[in-house]
Length: 284
Ligand code: C2E
Ligand code: MG
Ligand code: MG
Ligand code: MG
Image (tube, rainbow, N blue to C red; front, top):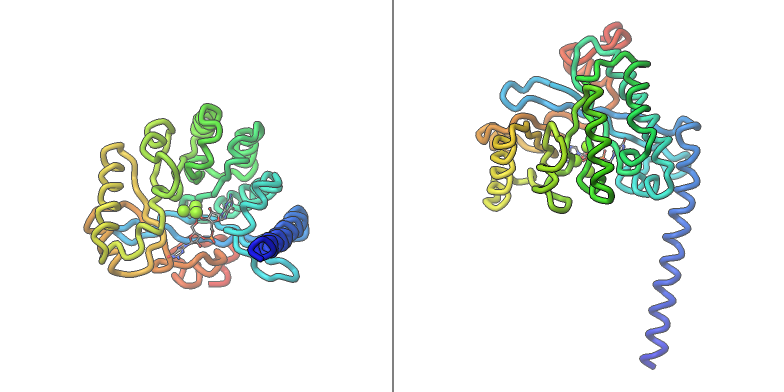
């Protein structure tokens, strides 16, 4: 009996895995056409100076509206796009779109773009970034590329070369999701980062949890020691922001200051104090 039960369980898993694999293949197929079919768009989330509250830039975040499924989370579709290399085409679209948008702003705020491992390891990536900067006219100093540690560890030497070449174009590199990857400390020493982004999971209830507070304080100390500004992600409450201010964290990003939204939203909500392109100015 035990044997047949075991086999039944096995079949159950096998069937489930079949569904998941099919699901992934369907999404993978749809992802290949998503850009061309106009199903992708970017939303923008403000990054603020903790001391003054001023907006210093925006992070571009990708959204996919599937014709039947509706919005699919990037946490779900980015890994699939990465496995299938569709990320190269999608990532190129993101870069062009984000730089084109930022170049149209009347204030020289920074624009942060997420870049995946597959892009970093593509031999065409540095050339692409260079071309997009030239074509859009965006000042390289305004572009910040966000990479996670896991994007670098598969081939660290190659990644280092790419990051150096990117920096020679004049842009900045931020380490995204700091604290969630592997061997964070040696990565900080090995790669030429310009900024550390503390993952939101460490910022949540930093004001009330002593362990979390200790971790965030030590990351801020690390940033100070290395001369790198630190941005805290996922700030949702005034108490979290107040903690960050007391601990002299440089920058913050999170629902408290603004949800990722179409850029026109910010122009309206702030009566023109946040980047207006010519169209938004007319609307405001
Ligand atoms: P990420 O780069 O670390 O982006 C931050 C994520 O936290 C975003 O999720 C954002 O919407 C969310 N977030 C911001 N503030 C808060 C907050 O106060 N509370 C909470 N709970 N969440 C907050 P999103 O937009 O779903 O993106 C998830 C991840 O997908 C990103 O993490 C990034 O790794 C990836 N991603 C998004 N867009 C792109 C892209 O264009 N290219 C690549 N390669 N990856 C992308
Ligand atoms: Mg990011
Ligand atoms: Mg992050
Ligand atoms: Mg992330």
